[in-house]
Structure formats: structure tokens, C-alpha cells
Image 1: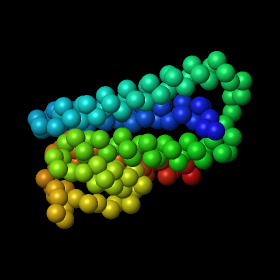
Image 2: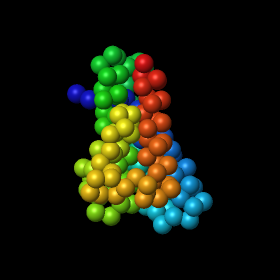
Image 3: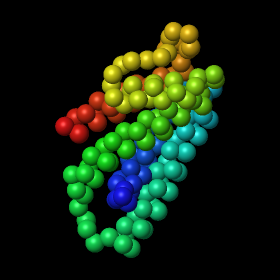
Image 4: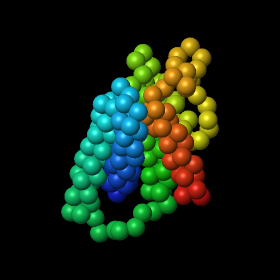
Length: 155
């Protein structure tokens, strides 16, 4: 059975991910790009989902739990599920901004950034990286920064 503390931590991580989308919105605003709304909506969706998950599991944990520490199994679960959840929610800006870009391609682009592999589906028969808006290009770069920092923190 999945521990609610794991979901609590994932909710907190998703909320922080949503807040990390805000600089992309500001960057788009600075350059007066057309994707300000979609980046803002992506941020709001991610923050909202993370906060709902966090508070539901927080009150459940507060009511039921006596154990404060996470086990090794819980730690592995947090890392695995958080990486997948972050990739899903990191894909939302691509999916909402790039018209005709499938969620599979968006997920690949987000996962590529968070794992810092550098692989991309942009450029072949879809959008060219150079044609992305400033805000989305910042988000793409920032996901790679988050992924690079994640490797350091997990190590």
C-alpha cells in the first residue's frame, strides 16, 4: 500500500514545480510573447494539483500517523513517483503552447529536460527550437537546470 507521506511530499514537490514556472511567465511578459496565458495556466494547474494533494494527505497523516520518518522504500517511491509526476506536469506548457504538439512529444521533451539527457523531438518535422517563444525556451532550459540539480541532490 502506498504511504500517504509519499503523496504528501509529491504534492509539495509539484507545488514547487508550479512556482518554478512563474519565471517563464515573466520572461514571456517581458518579451510580449503570445504564450503568457498558457504558461500561467500551466503554473496554476500544477500549483493547484500539488496543493490539493499536499493538504489532503497532510490532514490524513496528521489524523492517522504516529511515525514521522520515511523508510528506504518510501524514499525510493518518492523519487520514482516524483520524477514521473514532475514530467507529466512539466509537459503541460509544451502541450498547451505548441499547437499540434502531442502530449507524448511534450512528455518526452519534459522528461528529457528533467533527466538532463538533452534529447529532443523538436526540429525534425515539428517546431524548431529557435522558433519557440522566449518563455517556453526558458522553461525548456529551466527543466534541464532542475534535472541537473536533482542529480546533485539525489546523489
